[in-house]
Length: 416
Image (cartoon, rainbow, N blue to C red; front, top):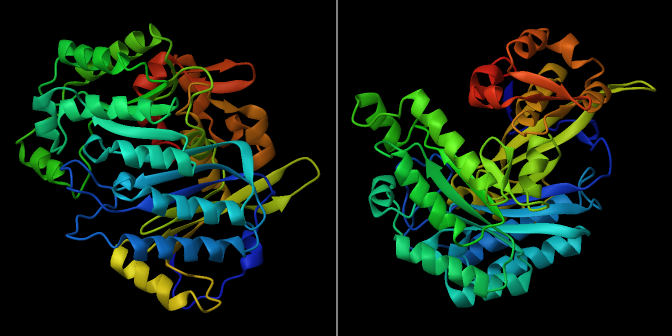
């Protein structure tokens, strides 16, 4: 159920965090140099980015949550600047946000602070500045080193700019970074993909994400797909490419830990793992989402955990105006436009399809303590999927097999 937040008082006490453990912070920077035809993220191309105004709004929103029960005083485990293109903002702006965040919330000693970047916006001075102000991880959207694929994807950067960006990232002191590649593109062959993988590996990345192209509703690619102008690869070719990615990366020490993500030991994305483990996260900025757990009922042995999810105003201009209108008032809504209560069944389903994205799967013990029933009691089909070879039990954890990972989406629909 989705309800409007406008004019509601609510009972804030219901949504206090279930514990005082650490949480993750997401900061949305919605501005881009151009809009890619496959992108359905909340990103906007404007003639002049209102960087100072937007940064001020983010800080006011962060300050607001720092005073609220359930957030104030808790530790931060990760911060992620996503977009859009965060690297369109100057280090001074990113640094202001991080300084404020640290003044409101204690940091874990090994906090992970990531900023997304596109190769065309990588500048050596800026990236040295990001490193100096506290960013310790970069996620860069290379997508491909093939000029034909970059043109098809509508990317404004060149392969040479990607190569130069990787050198700058290393020279700026980042030893922890992720490279994004897109695979199973129309017309792409396995040798094409192998060439992309080989070049990516030449930069010795500690983390690599390999995403299948998807045609998201509302995007230009979706309209072209529906009209038959472009088409996806046959399923057997997509599977073969996924197997090529896994075997190639494994041979270079990058182990798959999630459906589309590979990392060296201790280099997985802590921020994303928090999402996949259904942890609390606070999102600030235009269109940002937040999630906080709350207890529905509790016994001496188990708790039934639901939650609350909310979303900010998507339009950056209206977001800024809403924050400015409310910054001097004790307004609990700030820029929130939609709120959704997550009941026990919904929470259990999300826990399953998010947790099963990871190769380690989900803990039976954690599931029972969180939802008051066993996995089998919630989902009797688990037994059938195990017999079919799609799932397996390892060390009291339930996970998808290699075969199951290939058909994950057909399994996940049963949890939604």
